[in-house]
Amino acid sequence: MSKKKKKYYTVWKGHKTGVFETWDDCKAQISNFEGAQYKSFLTFEAAKKALKGNYKDYIGKNKSLKSELTEVQLKKIGQPNYNSISVDAASSGNPGKMEYRGVDTKTKEQLFIQGPFEEGTNNIGEFLAIVHGLALLKKNNSDRIIYTDSKTAISWVKNKKCNTKLKRSEKNKPVFDLVDRAIYWLKNNTYNTVIVKWETKAWGEIPADFGRK
Image (cartoon, rainbow, N blue to C red):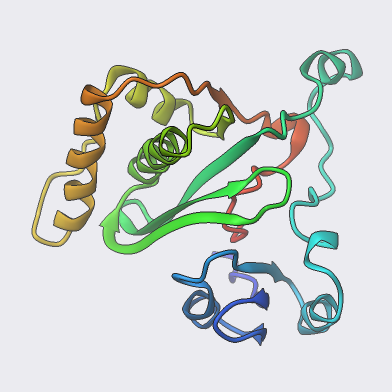
């Protein structure tokens, strides 16, 4: 088994700023901090250099992605609609510690973040992120769309059902409490927000990606 590469985390805006050597240390600086700005790097030198620069020059830039699509396909897909928010989830294990968030697609400003929860799955996190985004946009009477890279979560939202195989337990009760609230919201609210699949093959990782790949 190959050894996992070490990462360094630059925090431009958070409870404390700087370069942190573990995700847990980075997470402590950005959790519950509105508009947190951060990104992972493969070397300390790169992270330190980024700290002296501008967040927007680093975040959201796609990795050197050799698209599997042809130029015709790329042209047909076009560019993302920046009048939108993007949502994503991350799970350390499946099930495992899970969290989700939403960001402004263009500026990458974090709009909301929940977790980490002791036990959840990536699909549950993606589902909760979409519903959280729907509720936020409705509350603000916004015409923005929502981007997600999860077809599964889109179908769950459409069917107003979280079709997870994860069994309920005391350990994951906080997650299922949110799931129940999300389903209740979907069944008792109408919305005009369009939910769109993020075209990863054309645009790279979704802006809300947690950057742990």
